[in-house]
Length: 257
Ligand code: HEC
Ligand code: HEC
Image 1 (cartoon, rainbow, N blue to C red):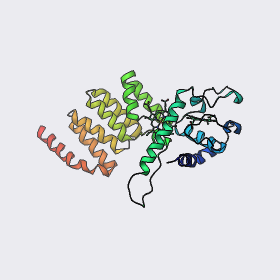
Image 2: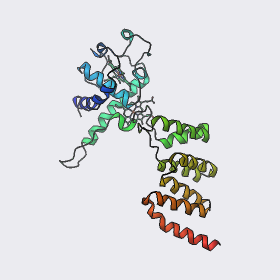
Image 3: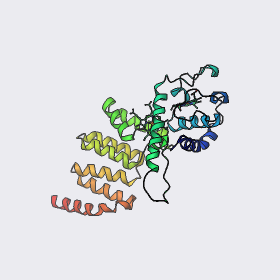
Image 4: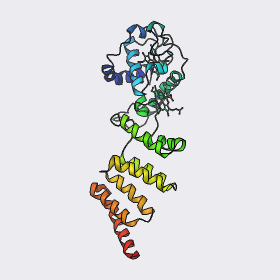
């Protein structure tokens, strides 16, 4: 993709965002005569530069002053947008080049003449947040550094803040996976605590019962496991594959008695 190409895609996705940000009062002069562009075309129009900056800011969840060297109190004439002093700006520039390379690779895929390749954007990875981490990684790191209780609180905070924006996957399935992983690491109590969180947040979701059922089964709590697997199937018939397992567990239970 050439420079025009990058601009086209950045510009297109920014149009919707511009409407939302229309009230942000940044003087248009700011975008005239840029002095330090190395990725964007140096002859970019002020309108396009403005749209691009609003767009990337939204896509990675960062305000202008996170990348540019001033604070929100600095008066406009003193704001030095050309400066490369702040690290995030330098990283963002590398990212812009990286995205360009990715898009070149994507559009070079040999998928036949009718195929219309998708465009990768900052938001494809970042989903509106500065560090594009998966929820599992955040949970694990927080548990390691600060303990499970803090990780559970943090999960709830993130869910509150980001649920509707879709920045993270808060599904019962993924949280069930987190619980199981903790459980399988030998921390039975911790695993059950995360299952309890999942029950609180997603108690009507079959995949919560499926995951907790598995933990019960591993603990040898067969009756509980059967009850959870049956509930999973009741709530969601895509758990039909559990029926064979339920019968086996029932046999096992009979054998014990
Ligand atoms: C994620 C980091 C990031 C954010 C957020 C960001 N910018 Fe930028 N900005 C850059 C990068 C990188 C460049 C240089 C691009 C290049 O080299 O082609 C740049 C260049 C500019 C320039 C041109 C400066 C010059 O003279 O070369 C202006 C003006 C500008 N940004 C304004 C803004 C405004 C206003 C905002 C907030 C709405 C904003 N930027 C948000 C990273 C960012
Ligand atoms: C292919 C996925 C991907 C895409 C697309 C992507 N990024 Fe990133 N970005 C990352 C990853 C991963 C990191 C963390 C890098 C690290 O661990 O040092 C990151 C980190 C950053 C950071 C540093 C954040 C911080 O403070 O730690 C900035 C700024 C950034 N990206 C801006 C952008 C911009 C602007 C775009 C679009 C032009 C973009 N990224 C597109 C994956 C991506």
